[in-house]
Amino acid sequence: MLFHVTMDVKIPRDLPAEERADILAREKAYSQDLQRRGKWRHIWRIAGQYANVSIFDVQDNAELHDILSGLPLFPFMAITVTPLLRHPSAIRDDDS
Ligand SMILES: O=C(O)CC1=CCC(=O)O1
Image (tube, rainbow, N blue to C red; front, side, top):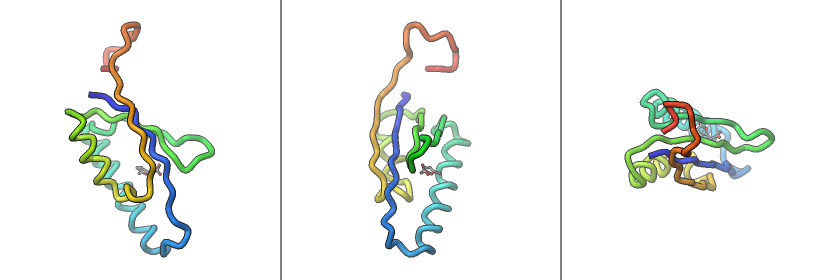
């Protein structure tokens, strides 16, 4: 199942710099592992915002929930999930 996910990041300004750096490093490693495993298909920065648009390819809602709630930045993000399905006019074979 494919999901479009928007993550809007809001890290508190008073979070100690060391803690912030540690969370960001863990977030990057977590994301890149999921990308290598084909679960996190796309990640795009939204221009001008500390936010991203991502496409996830997972078994079901529960797997997506587990992945998103395991994000090191999860406590500091507003997340919006939109389920996707193949459009009948799509011509690319790898879109479903
Ligand atoms: O910077 C972001 O958009 C938040 C984020 C998600 C995965 C990652 O590496 O950073």
